[in-house]
Length: 196
Image 1 (cartoon, rainbow, N blue to C red):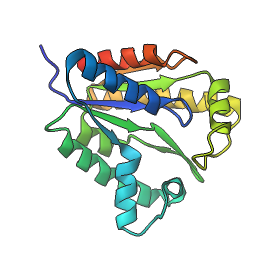
Image 2 (tube, helix red, strand yellow; image 1 turned 180 degrees about the vertical axis):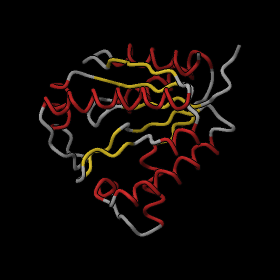
Image 3 (cartoon, rainbow, N blue to C red; image 1 turned 90 degrees about the vertical axis):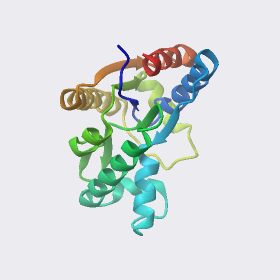
């Protein structure tokens, strides 16, 4: 029986290499199956909503918005993604948790995931030390510094959040390790999940 849901949510904390894994997996799906997959970045969807409302000028300001505004942006982005997923296989590139000035904001709350109805939530993970190193070397983003121990806690909390999404929606939850120098291997696991 073929899965009728078209959405795979792919998550991972900043610096884990999630976007590289996604892009490589999409290339593999195209090459092996001849299929296109639409990548929707949840943060971009939220940013578009927030920009139109005049709340932010750049994406890194998003996590500093009051949580009530962030929740409204999440809801609007979830509705837009659900509409696009009606006609295409979709990967939603997002974070399960967003670090804010008032603690972690759930990136995939009930009102978003019940709209999106994912078939699988994938957590891309890496060693905490590698993530800290990648962040330190990334001059393209204004990333907050985080200790290695805090990065580990963040990843563990993301696992709990992903399981909550699975509980609410019936989605499966999969962990894919993005080991240093083995992005093709991680991407292959994701490609299999997309095409399952």
